[in-house]
Image (tube, rainbow, N blue to C red; front, side, top):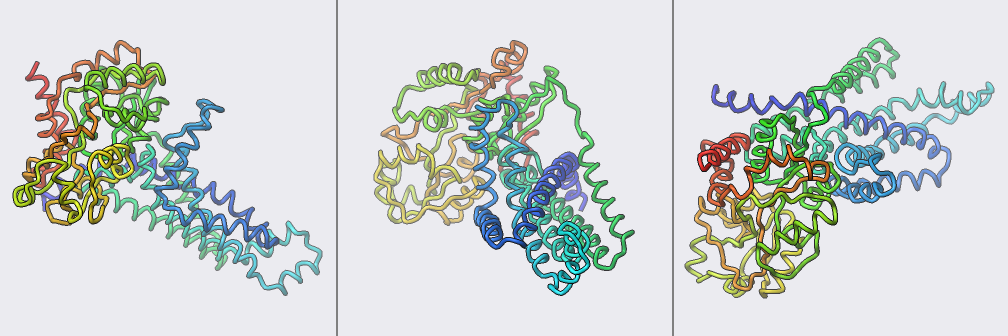
Length: 516
């Protein structure tokens, strides 16, 4: 029991700050949805055409997965920055707010229209008979009678919004989803539990308080309703209290959704803190979002990979030597976006096709050509991005791969899928410690279909020429071997004696100091 408490307690240390930001986002989205939906419901209850259009649009939004809706707002807002500059922030709060607001519209709008249309016509006629105006009739008759139905819709929207807000992590908005995504990737179930329990508790408490207000309206017990409203206001006030201090030297460190990125972000953060900077982390970003975030100063520093920039951002499909690729990327990033590619960290993390050792031996699979021969009988497991990346098209152009089926997994579960025979080959990462731990066999790529993936330190335009900043991160360049990176990664991946990304980063920092 004591061991479990020692594990769960650190997981809850980040909850207050993330809960505050989760509350801010959820309440703001719910408030904006109310401002849009309630007036629109009044119009829709009086005009069938407006009702059809409004409810149809709200229903259409619900067919789009929340994660996709969040992702769609980023490029849209990014395009608007050309017109409005710094007034539009394409990463973080704004895209999350807009997506969650749209998601909250349907239950509020539908219940409000239903409630207003459900008012007894005889009562409406009586109101007309005593000479009430439309505004008076709405305020004194229709709204009070429809209030219970409207409140039911608000309660549903509140629960949906609080739950969906955990996905805002993917576009750089801190939330309780930070704990869930990081926990899933690092297999730290205490983090997952902390995020899920806190999010669920928040949704239940808000639902109870809104239910109390609904009951108070129905039974005309105003005092109970005011107490519930005051508690909701207190929660919002808590969310608005700053939980951390920041100044002009605050550095935003970005990381993608896998362990190596979490570790390297912590390593960078530790060095910058030693140099006197205050750091904050934006974790769990996708590759495209990460690069654009750095170019727009939404993230000040990150680790990206040469092959990702070469294929995804530069649209290059040719193969060149690694030094030439890094030099070309460095010049292109500086000239196009003002981003400083400070240099490589010293190791490569490329896509590497891996199979189980028994299959490699029994089927004589050593190269990608051999894999093409047996591919009709193999299930291909990949991470969530690979099948849509240019590298996959380049591999298919080079080798006649025709898999029996293709399945996408979170990277954590991709390796488990191979070992448990739910997949027969995976698009592994060459610096991942789980390859050696499971004795997986990496297949040779004789045609060089996959480009080089040197880990590069990317600095946003704001700090691209800052001598103090560059000096703080300079010792990391060309200092990390792939063997040390694999070992650090496996510290987080392994099931026994698991380390956190921060602990693995401190170990890696110690290795660099010993090397010096």
